[in-house]
Image 1: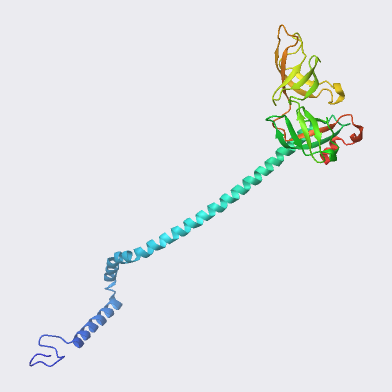
Image 2: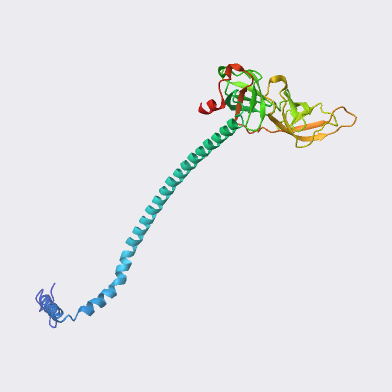
Length: 294
């Protein structure tokens, strides 16, 4: 309700109407715009105002900038983790392939050494056999992947790149059981290469030792002498390395000395062995060169 003596909506004494104020402010604005357009007096004022409100822009933009940085960081980290996982998988695969290549190279080297060491068997049939399983705990025996289908026979000699390994003990169609020269049930005629003193090398049930039998206390045998096959019995070719004399102990009061030898063949490390058809004419036409080609 309007006060007495005053009409509603009319400005009181000393008051300026809204319309008048609008006109005054509009006139001032237009004046300033014209002056700024012509004389550029307000440029510094605008610069100062811009500088004054800059911190406000920073504060207002800070949460958005922080969120954007956090999002990018999480995204970049995820991408880096995925890239590291991919590179690690590729590295594992490359290492596996490298191991396979290395294994094949080593296998080729072993086979080449095995065949090269028996090039003299040009008139003998030879065949490489893979060792499938080994039993060195109770018996010095192993299984090979050759059998009667390959004309393997009981008693057939086995070699590796260094010397005599053993003999075939039993034969089936596809596999055979071989007896190492260190088996307690195995014996082989041998000779001391330096003096050609003949003896028997008997297995001791230990893959690292052989016993040389019936050598008198005064026998011309010394530690380090090479023991070779004598060729007696016509089972093993003569002159093939069997072992190195490890110990010679004279035993006064007894007929024979205690003599042991260390096998030269890698009996506990072989992966392949060489089957030799010694003096068997049925396979004499297959030479080492033919085995390489095969």
